[in-house]
Length: 387
Ligand SMILES: Cc1cc2nc3c(=O)[nH]c(=O)nc-3n(C[C@H](O)[C@H](O)[C@H](O)COP(=O)(O)O)c2cc1C
Image (tube, rainbow, N blue to C red; front, side, top):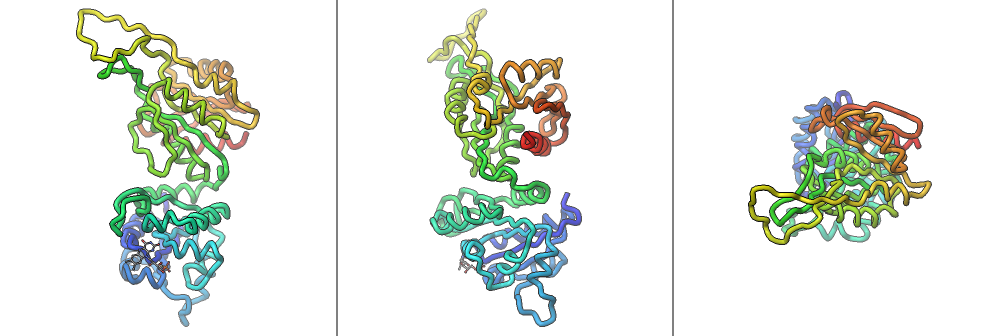
């Protein structure tokens, strides 16, 4: 997937520098050409020879090498993408202030390629308003930032500041090589998962939705710069810590949360499989066994329909329909009845765990999409953004 991509890896002087060795190795194995720039402080943590042995490419640690070309320019022009991992508070601050006093900071200044920063630092450093202001400033200038993970930090503190998993970084690199930050400044609301309607404290009614399509859309929108709110019922996926996620397990809870969040949203994707019916009465005690049992159900509120009635002209509302027959016909009915901008319909017998096939209708188009849920999510965003 990264074959022949030219990635310039910038290593700065953080304790997580050793983790970037594995990143360099993984990127190289995936076919990328990886050249490395290390700051002087990074060399205190990991030896340049380690990166050189792994990438089989130059590792540059100084700007004033008498035998070299004007490397900050040649490297800046060579790269398809710059990845600063780990990124210290210092390199973020220097870039935000336009300081170019070593090879890495000068190359960042000189490149027109996308730059991805992967901050990792002590929680107080990360939360420091100066660091946050620098991140915000650079984000507005189209630099990309990953959010650090939450956990035990090398300094002994627990909090947000950990270097994210290399798989996550690679995931971001692949996306950024392909897509622009075209959702920057937009608020995106995504619902996902299977609601649970309680019968008694032990039992509930639910469905097979995993939440994977919703998560793929949320992640794709996040990487493309959107501010994402992820409202979820029960999901079988790990939700990234950096999401603004709100749990709402039942249809009633989902209704309340979504209606509250909807007014702030520019684009809403309703992928959650919300129960159409809920028990008339949920028992406080576990219901005892008997020969037969009748469970009386009542309709839940139709959230999508309410949103369709409420939406303003500059809001985009995308519904999802999982069908077992008459895909186009049923999708069209739902599209019209609920006043949607788009509907994504899928045949439940075709959709797999990680792959899907979707028919998207709206804006005068009827397009079939297929592939991994993540790739389909990007294709959906491409279509929705053309509206
Ligand atoms: C043991 C040790 C660990 C450090 N870890 C971090 C870190 O994780 N993140 C960070 O921003 N700075 C960290 N620092 C501070 C940076 O090394 C320092 O700000 C330095 O000036 C960064 O230089 P550079 O950005 O040019 O590599 C650490 C310093 C030491 C001594």
